[in-house]
Image 1 (tube, rainbow, N blue to C red):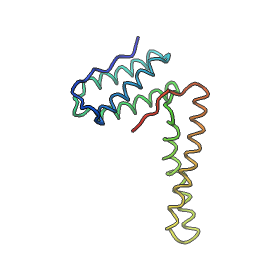
Image 2 (image 1 turned 135 degrees about the horizontal axis):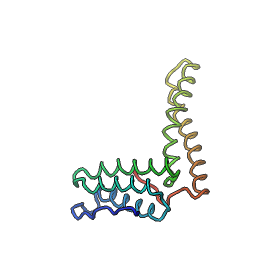
Image 3 (image 1 turned 60 degrees about the vertical axis):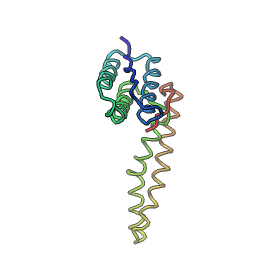
Length: 152
């Protein structure tokens, strides 16, 4: 079984955000087609494509973003395949929220001035970027990285 094609849409404006998102999704699909993907995952991908093909153009931009996120989650969970800088982007937020905020709160409380709370955010961000970059390099060395960097 093969991965279906997106329906060609002539009603998308040239150089619009919808067009950019549409072509990014098409490029992602073409890169995935080059991989050896198991049948159950192909069926789930084809369900996503069928849903997108039935979406009217006015709702397409938001639907493309949601389905792209869903597709990446399927690939990550089922096959451990991720796009370039996936883990870096993911861990940036995790580092700020799970590491930076507690560091900032503890620093602010120990000094007695909660204005120092904000110092923890860049510390957490740096730690998150470091962890995510390490995981991205590991995925690349193991051949689990797609040759595309997704723009949001």
